[in-house]
Image (cartoon, rainbow, N blue to C red):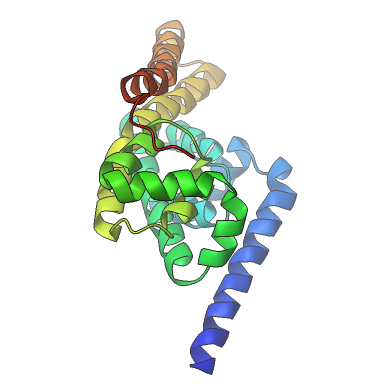
Length: 221
């Protein structure tokens, strides 16, 4: 029992230190930095990128930077697949950390909104998880941990997360791709930029639409 507690404490300490280091150095981590890390991996670049994204999610590395980098590195199709898969793996890891290692710490960090989340998940299950994935009530990285201390099943959580993060993954991946094309002078730059802006507009409007449809069904705080 003592050994298990020490192991849990050590793992939790590693995660807290990792998050602290990322927060301290986040101004030095941008799309270009991530691209340089990945490009050095050669043929293993997709695996290295997904590893960075998955672990980075656990340590609160900004998902927007990673997603834009994925689009710039791998294009809109493969980039979306790598981004979405890696983000989901990272979300699953964070969920497991919260459920088995850090429930008290997550509860302190989520504050008063945690009650709203727990009530919503326990009353609606995966549907509420879908809602908070599409409507950003919580920051992405923190939401992964917060959902780990609810009663939602791991499989339901994982599948819902993968599906409901798809719209945002498509939009931001394409934005990263369009940005790279603009820098290197690719073809049809104007069309690609307009498409990227249109996708962002759709994703930006989606939360409003869902909130309107659900305004009478959101659990009270």
